[in-house]
Image (cartoon, rainbow, N blue to C red):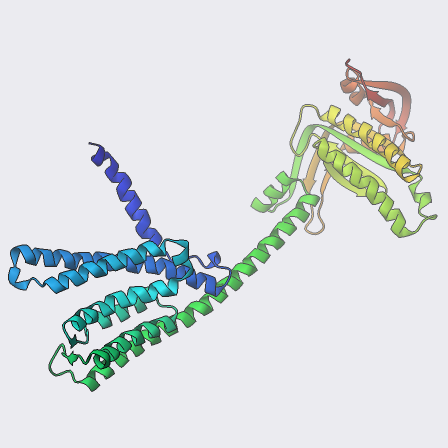
Length: 443
């Protein structure tokens, strides 16, 4: 029962192993062509050795079948040779899995080649014969050229090694040459082997040239893609610095005019008092550096409070809460931002020796937000709430945070506010305003 249950798992393992052997290494896995080629040779050697082991196993089974059912066809020397070759192939495969073998794929390649091609020659040598293997040699040379079509020099060395043993064993041991077929003369044999070797090596050489060019082309394309990806991420980052993330996603999906209405939003305008007069006393570079330091601190505050910075105009800073994603605490969030902006400016003055002051105005209510135009577009706001917030700032007091009566009613239970009184707002007439002082102490 357990063997039946384990069968699907075994099948999956065998299929996965076969796929891994047949898979060509990805071009991006090697940092250079030599590294990729080494990985390719290792993978194909695993496949070649595995196929050779299966092939020799089939011949061993054939000899065993002859032993029991066709004794007249059984050849004991053949069976012994095939068993020895099978063992050598298996040992080569085991060595290939070690770190030593993986660092020396060329040696495993030659061992693989010579174990198959020289085994009949060594067997014949014991009988005082020298018999060219017109079957094993071409089969091995073409098989290796097909399975491992790189490193043509290795193919040439393996072929020359076979010929060297064939002729040197004749000379050393004075062997009797026994041709496989009577009509094959020595000259014909050499010409036959030359063309086999030439065709095998030429195919390997041509494939390797093609593989080298394709590797470099793919690597160049990959580098270009990576550079394009970097540039795309850089453009994305710049775009996210201009527009809110949800708006960027919407523009990508459908690049049309975006305009959304929000019922509850908090709008803040802040303006540094006396900054224009300061521009006549210091250099433009120093002026911009000071302003950049202040507004960069404000940007960090906006991130901390999850608010959306809209824009800066000269020495004015505009930020909003409650959009592009609505939030229930929009008024509290914009109030906390205003208090932290005032505190941050005080700390900046202490650290730099400056004496900057700031007017801050806040209004809450409905707004329209969106992106218009095709060039240099920004995410902007429109509506009475925006205009009133701007008037709260421009009619405000230095170092004070002026808010509308509507905002006061939302914040009065959690914050300390003082009534300033009525002020005239263009287009609105008289409006009651309040000054936000601090957050109430809940202790």
